[in-house]
Image (cartoon, rainbow, N blue to C red; front, side, top):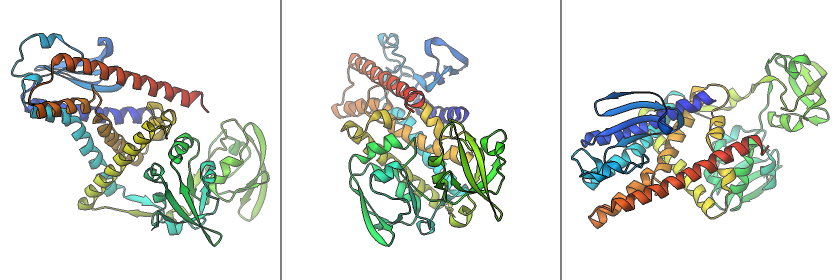
Length: 438
């Protein structure tokens, strides 16, 4: 998990900073430092100098930076501004060139995200469950039941549009859009379920614990892990769980809610033609101890592959949708309709998304998504972010004169305070949500 997150960040940060670096060098601007991760307080893992630039890796994996000569940036170096501008400095270049330099990082991240998505669609394809094949209906988690879904409901349409792929029903964009309406078949009767403006906040608080709705999935036991309750109770690969105590278990989603921490529970097992009863001692982690065999899914799911010409437009479409969802989510947070404590994920929560096992398909999917989100976040008009610099450069182009260096320095300080405060909040919240809010 940690290794995947660090590798993803190393790729994204390095290429983001290379975007600034390449643009600066193209216009003859000197780059004094190029660092992956921060060399806070002058501490670094290693560095070397080539030409005018020091290249290195810092010890603090929270980002990276390029120090561009003659630019007021996160280094807060004012000494360089006390001397006349040199031809190879950022401040001596036309505003349009400086604008391109500042847009270099987000441009690379946007292109990278779309490219990763495109090649993933070509190589791995897009695996999905046709809604028509969700023959057992849905499993409604507590949040799903709260808004009106019931176990066994069969999805028909969303906002009047028939559902072709089941994952269309759990698209985050639906959750931040007020008035999303689902039509379901409930025992032959059509029922409408409407998500109001409070749903996004409810979802942000619940998704880490369970979720919303899911397709019911039949399962049987795969490999049994040694030393686990399943192993100690002599459960075997190929067994079917029929019930836990008096609770019937037909689908995988019904298993975990039936478990009770630190108790002995009786599992009713089907093994071949024999029905057996096994007593398991369940620990506080609610682990039974088997790999899951979703034996029907290979026949129910489909994979859609994209050609080279199809994959890039599809990658761009998905990137646009992701940014749109982010914008709506931030809008709801600013309006007080979503709690940022539950909505903003820090490195711990993001790391968990990669999973405990290394799967390249999942790694590249999350890396692409983070790249797009990083491009979007960096374009926010906050001083000290690329978007803040872009905003001031656009103002400079409009008024046809540079903004005062003292003003730019003050704005940089304000921006750094905002970013550090946001970082402290996100990290502190991440730790609280992980270890104390269980």
